[in-house]
Amino acid sequence: MGLTTILGAGGTIANGLAGILAADKRPLRLVSRNPKPMSEAELMAADLSDREQTIRAVAGSEVVHLLAGLKYDTAVWRETWPRIMGNVIEACKRAQAKLLFFDNVYMYGRVAGPMTEQTPYNPCSKKGEIRAHIATMLMDEVKAGSLQGMIARAPDFYGPDTPNSVGNVLVFGPLAKGSAASCMVNADVPHSVIYTPDAARGVALLADRASAWNQVWHLPTVADPPTGRQFIEAAAKELGVAPKFRVLSPLMLKVFGWFNPQVGEMYEMLYQNDSPYLFDSSKFAREFGFGGTPYAEGIKATAASYKKA
Image 1 (cartoon, rainbow, N blue to C red):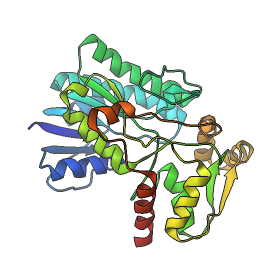
Image 2: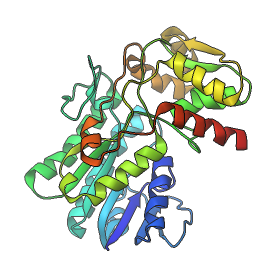
Image 3: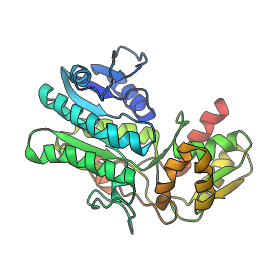
């Protein structure tokens, strides 16, 4: 069993994946700027925007997972993401390692109907343009036969021990403190969210399936998602609090963005919240017989994690 390397260790999905691999006694290397110990995994500090550091981080690997995250800033993404992807591709080619890239759905842009693996790239945001570019960089190498690669995509997250996810920041965190939850733009349209343990499990399953490589996959996300209102009501019920919430309008967010750059960076992505945001992972369900944790079960487990805190 060869070495698996996680680039971007320390994030929620990376931690979940590392736990799965460690439990399976896989040889494991965790790479980040400041990696934290986990079981018997090898730790390596590296800056993935540096070519030589990336080559060293990947050397000797059989499978590489790119789960790195960058500051939520378009200028940072434009400058750094293509460099990281180029460095990781080169490093994997040198090491003859397979590369799995954990991606989002920004490159699809506004979609009428469910997003599938066949949905064309049609970004309507600057961040989406960047994600389309780096995804194309990887799949062009795959098509050329110079690299075994895969893209595993996920929508917005929620789950235990996921404090920075959309679902937790807007819903579970505030409700658990007795404050009102927030819903972006429209509380009455369905919005797919993936349960973080399912995302980690899905990545592990894909990497182990030889026939899954050289494709794009959507990670297991339950169909028929709740609306923002329904999600908040379910979370509040499990937390034992009133389902108080406010709807954040585009104008409110634009004003907030003048004072908070992070909020300002979110503004161009509001199209994901004003109409149904539907993520289809039926391809994964057909292949692996797993379509995701039911929302009621995931919401209950997430609420329980806040009760323990």
